[in-house]
Length: 445
Ligand code: UDX
Image (tube, rainbow, N blue to C red):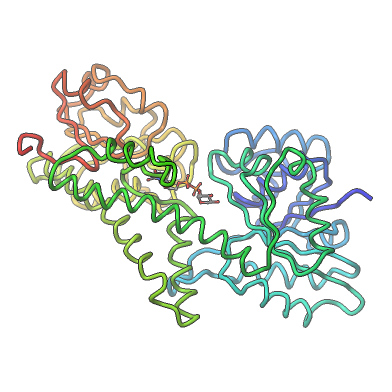
């Protein structure tokens, strides 16, 4: 019998997972409480920017393999495997994860499941969640139904979501028996046949794998950014330092780019939630270093703001600042916890006139901070600027030419917040250019 799948929660993770499951050949129902989002998805319109995903969505909405509903009853009746992909945002009252959406979606499914079913958690959750949910299932499942639980974390990166789902580095299953394992292997058979490594483990390990991966990545970024603080003081070249240590295969060069730091919907909240969880477990010292990782990361933003101020002779009020990039990374329209947007807002709050251009992020940023001046091109953002800040490394900005930018600005001052421009080429025609990891001003070197 063909597998029938539901995906509960049609945000970033869920919409991607649903479309990719349809691509693997399954009949998929995406479930959400947000009717507007459902209507858009059902019309083949993706409510966020993710390369390659709109095509997949339209293909499978068109083929009828991918449907959307707000009815848990329909999902329970028409699917046997239910992936939970709802959000686990940071709680309003602390650093822990808000588990309300996960709990509600499981409860809603349990109300309607009458036969055999497998619930598969994919959301990033505090360790111990699966065991807690298993007790909830035992308590609330309808008489006569048989509901199993597995944990199957997702490691997709924004901008590469389709590729990361269809060709992941690994598949991790937290299971408590052979039957859930066999079902997951059936679901992922086309991916496994391509040679994707499989890790079969218990619930707790599966939950921890996800947060451990994100904590490691965050730590790696803050590690190099901590060295950036050193080179900013003594001189030296942070990129060369990263290249040199990156040659050591045990270290590796990836995620060693010093810059304005990490943001987005995962890394910042996940390291905070992990600290909160281990504290609950009486292990607050164990992850104490993550508080430092967070602090180093946030100091990057202070550094860029103070650099802008120094470049402008200490004066921000009334100065024109052109900001290139507001998303937390390129190829995304996501501005959640974006260092770029935070820096732009701080400069505005300090009295600067801030013009912002992002190829995809303007609308989301304007939704949060409408008072910045959002414009439609880098030329407009940089028009008559006293200083330009490149804060998200979109390809369009990596290709900027010093002569072109010089034509529109008032003063040739540039902060390359992602260290992607060739400093020498810019300095050659008189730009005052600097960036993270660099001692400023130059003449003190
Ligand atoms: C991350 C994880 O990579 C992914 O596996 C997980 O499933 C979700 O969280 P994502 O949030 O899409 O993915 O972004 P990622 O590519 O990891 O980048 C995170 C942040 O780190 C971005 O703000 C990026 O600009 C920054 N970063 C990344 C650096 O500052 N330096 C680097 O060297 C790499």
